[in-house]
Image 1 (cartoon, one colour):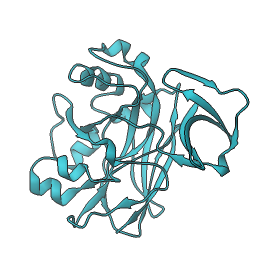
Image 2 (image 1 turned 90 degrees about the vertical axis):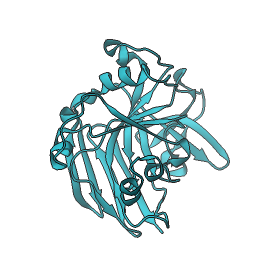
Image 3 (image 1 turned 120 degrees about the vertical axis):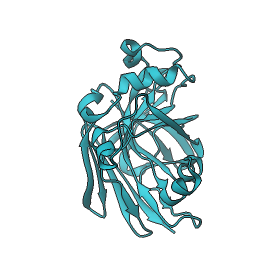
Length: 251
């Protein structure tokens, strides 16, 4: 299934996207059954970020190729940080370049979307707590990250977490191609098979620290090839079997 959030005039709702049609659902975290008698053409809807997380839990340095690129040893445990819910935007919405930064980078990532409350979850049970997967861009003010020595300010600006276009269910997360295109040129390309800590292990690890709620997202890390964007650029995250998320960059 492809689950999304949509706007039609003044109404915002979840729906199942099937080709060029969208079928509204009451709550995909409770039941994905369509509302009887309602459907829309996808073209008449605005596609929003596919969920509204209470928090985005992000994993740093989780690709072997990215660690090698930085000449860093792989971490012994996942390195976690948070992005606020106010950073979330959807497909096509602009990433706003903050005035206090001189270097903003893209970071293509696979995002895990939680389907139900998760606390103290075992790795072998983690799949049962996941609704599905979507594309994410962990936009980062790199100069501020280096200046501050920690990551909160650099990762937390409004618009610094594009998500979408849809939550895709029923896919295996362990061998997905992850790519980033800057103005049509591919700058990142790897596979989730190169994750240091795979998806189910991350879900278990995070759930032993904090309670994950339905709609929360875990960003699984970015591969090698991270680089800067400027106002006027267009960046696109593409993940095989998941979709393509494209956003412009504006001043």
